[in-house]
Image (cartoon, rainbow, N blue to C red):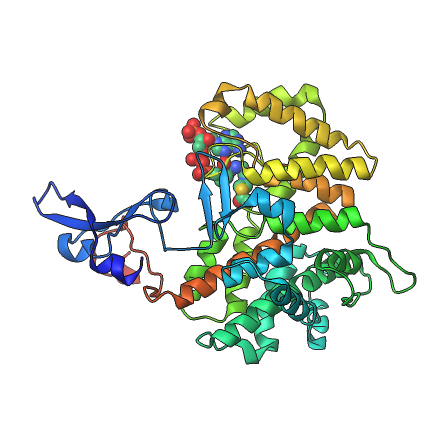
Length: 437
Ligand code: ACO
């Protein structure tokens, strides 16, 4: 909310505490699109009560101009631009510029930005050693959490969060270095050499080169794979106040440094209810194995007493088809055709989607494939191992996190995130000495 909005609200919502008869009139704000919000900031002082909303189902935690999700219509905008148009005409680095700076770059701005990202891809040599401390079979997301956090120990010159130039440098470094960290996490798990980035390659090509090249022979990047990587990064770049975006805002509200905050978001993304779902989808499809087992797994997903859920289906905000899933499903067709392969898991995934769309349980609850449902099939085809899927998501989403963090720092309404609670523990009681218990 702008200052103007906060000082002269035109619309209000009245809250009445029926137990005391006290009431409070609260300002209502409307954004450019999406549901309005009413500001409960002054409520506790006047009524002496708090709101209760676990999971933030009805609560806006901040104002943001970065991305808009229109759940009922299945629409996603980055800075006002529909994801479909960006997927068709833009590139990941152009989208990074858009998300960070707020508008599309002209040719010169894009070239300067691309140059900067390309020239920050190397890691401090001390960080190479850092990888060696992990167990040989560590999950690459565990390595990501550790190495991203460790950046704050290697880049001391970008820790002044109050300096806009320094924040910009941190953002460039994060976008540039994440593919290097990610690829090296994979190479470490294989006991293989860590290839250095190459400046003549595009962002997506460079990631593939660091994932798959060997110093002993030339490596040619498959252009279909490079295009797919770029589009996957682009479609994952930002998504409103999801769990990992909210994590960076909460961590950052304490004025912690950006690398520590991004590391917290990486940890949040890892969970199977969030970014870990792309890995979980493939494991689920492998477990289902064949079409004749679909009935059994669909029945389990519908059973309230069974914790099993169909991975890659459902979303807190979308109760319609996730627009990113549409783009990715089409990309999946293209990649499989280009690789001339017929992945049986893709056929099974399409059969599962078809079955789910005819099933009242899923239709009634608005459960459609989300971004994670088809992305794993593309990554598998390109040769990315399953435990790297969430890492790929991390590379794409880092720009969203750091843009959300920057927006939070520059918002004059920001204060340390500090939710209240409904206390249900014992009321005050006296300590009983050990001998008397
Ligand atoms: N399979 C079966 N049932 C489901 C699924 C699913 N995948 N998702 C939701 N439901 C059911 C719930 O059991 C609930 O049923 P009920 O009304 O009878 O109690 C109803 O649909 C509403 O679900 P909620 O749990 O209230 O939805 P919520 O918004 O809390 O959860 C979430 C959203 C976490 C994404 C959930 O749909 C899920 O677990 N999906 C599978 C994991 C997944 O794909 N995660 C990736 C999300 S996208 C992303 O983070 C990039």
